[in-house]
Length: 293
Image (cartoon, rainbow, N blue to C red):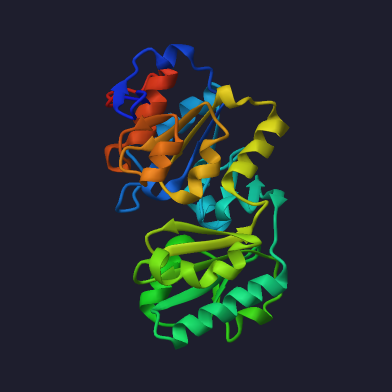
């Protein structure tokens, strides 16, 4: 069930919360939030999505994942769904771009050159230049490509990522060690003018300062006439922080990054305990048979 933070950040049950909620938009991160640690969708997801649709509640995945990857995951229910992809830099509904925020090519190329220097210095990592058409990589070993395939259905191996013909909306960097300690420090020069976000234990994303999940959610709220009081969001990692600020019903997963827990207004059970669906079902009093509520 949902929780509300007490003044000293002690999680306490808040059984009256659902009585006050008029939810029109549910936005959730994917990895570490909706999906469990084995990257599986929670039991009951499709039933809950059908009930939300019946009530006119828009469900929107907001992820660092590629649009094509998200669209495949939700292929059977994708009609009318808004996909906030690539950490908010590319937003699509029914195959139509709603918004995007491409990087200056010189910046994208500069990040790629930085990644090459890190590799030359012995850091076990690789860069993914994320375009609207596909994601582009130079590294070809199976261990790295297996990680790329998790998040980028449409990906291409090229000799030179700086020579591709595409709008680059984000550069993602994957490290087999701690990305926060091995990759992020080398990107400090870009942090002066762009967002450098540690989006997972092994991932760092670089985007324009104007692009994040929060900006995408605010634009969606404005376009649809939905207020923060009518919005519920879920997140677990640092690339979710701005998104949490868009909703009065902002939830950190109970096993989220400490900064996310501090930023959110409420706590939900962990991603491995079906926290998103349990909270949505309870808050909206959905008639889900046999659900753990």
